[in-house]
Length: 111
Length: 116
Image (tube, rainbow over all chains, first blue to last red; front, side, top):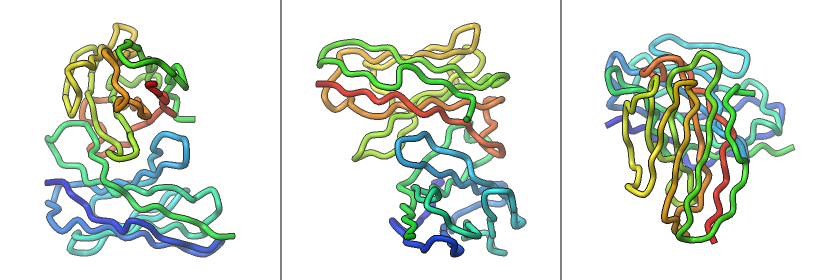
């Protein structure tokens, strides 16, 4: 079971940091954590992924708990363009190439 | 721009009809995935092709079929359309057959199908 658990919705203020949580308590040692986001009327867009260590890229940071049972996507300064549905996805080695999307977290950003 | 191209962007058709959705993957990508997104079901994986061969099947109805051609573009055929088939259909691509395990999938912006 590759299930992850995320809050249905979150709110943020523009130019403030946003921390989006994800629980994946049944994760195994070789499972990756990926984050995708979907802006209105667009296809999902890759944000970041990681295995054990914290990861940074130009879009966001991914903080993975030491026990790997949870992770947090960090947007350092939210903009109005970051309003989207954010999906936390666990990928399992040898389970094929498809991604299984849950319901995600709908992030709204207030000016 | 993800590099994945889907056509058409919008399609309106009647119940009982048949339509074909087209996807051109990113240059160099051999895998193509099809997803359906409806309001009540979220993003559902339909089917994956890798280098012309079917690799994985999800919740794809028997009325739906897909193929990947030698030039790697893919088509999703939907027949005997019903009102409930109205949805956004997304295509994604990746280099390998299991690339999404530790690499990004690249999605197109979808085809919005409306069945009346």
